[in-house]
Length: 455
Image 1 (tube, rainbow, N blue to C red):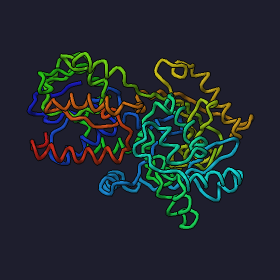
Image 2 (cartoon, one colour):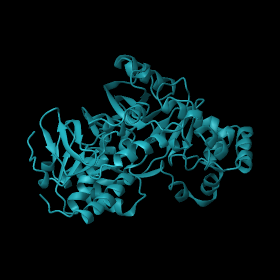
Image 3 (cartoon, helix red, strand yellow):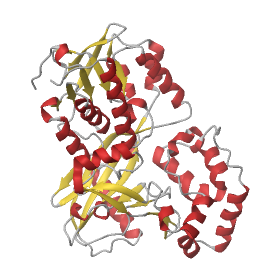
Image 4 (cartoon, rainbow, N blue to C red):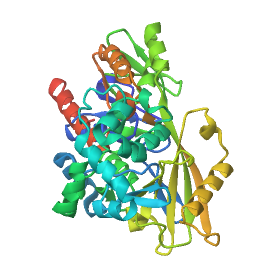
């Protein structure tokens, strides 16, 4: 890896080549700033890549692009053209041998839930306080917002399995905006207002690229310019003088001088890389913050489709996987016409049972689950399979995590040339459209405060 180490030739140094880092580099170049981006992996995209398994393509997560910011959506349409397509593919929750549409659909629930259970849910929706803004933890928020029956059926078990923690220890923020649609108002809107009301839910209608979600990263990298991107470049030290980040070390080699730095690295990692290190209490605080990892089982199947859904969710605690997604239902170009591919997600704590489980055992569990769910028969052929580990998939937003991340962020904010951007860097749950919008705002601010010409 070769690069110019003159500080003035690189006014903006971006650490990390995931969606946040690529968006920062893309918008910075559009604003006329010179950029260099360092990515530890051999390819950009972070945890939002598309990988190949023979004739099959699959993403490193059940990703969707949500049309929630007109400017960002327009930018991505300009980058991808007709390859960015709108998809309307509802997901389902697998519950007691039934598949419940998600977003929840009234006629579907009437067909699949007992009338007594529906009556209980409706009564609770009318009688619960819906004052969850000040809830102390996720369980309290779920019970107050959705009532005990709905919360216990579809929210609490799944959430605890996803995060590997009791719902009373999790912040209400772990829900993000994924729970839209789990309320009586949306239920009635769909019943009497038509399908357009349901399509507003994040999980039901979204954009998706023709060749997989990683095409967003690839197109952004192309627009940024690959000569500005340095892959295989792991950050091993951030040297500072207490006021500014002065140098970054790549792969334990010679330090590189920097001017302005945007870090998308995990917040806790940045604290560990600082030289000299931060005060001991902050180091301890960083060590107490955790990330949830994922393991993916990928199965190529000799059949045209497995389901009609974008995703299937498994709230049952006895099932080790939380979600299955079928890329072909996002784009038909993800698999051959007569075959399909599915991906199952297994959330894990690093060093835990799921993380240490053998690939053979994990694949066996995946096949067993599909058979038990009636999705596969004994004669169905798995023509290809692989496994993929996704570290730092989600920051674990437990009770108190926001206060911890605020304290660490405030410390790092004292470095006048360091900016944090991204899910891991800001220790929050967010979507790609938000990351692009934040990157756009940040680069405009940087341009206004320190304009520079393109290198």
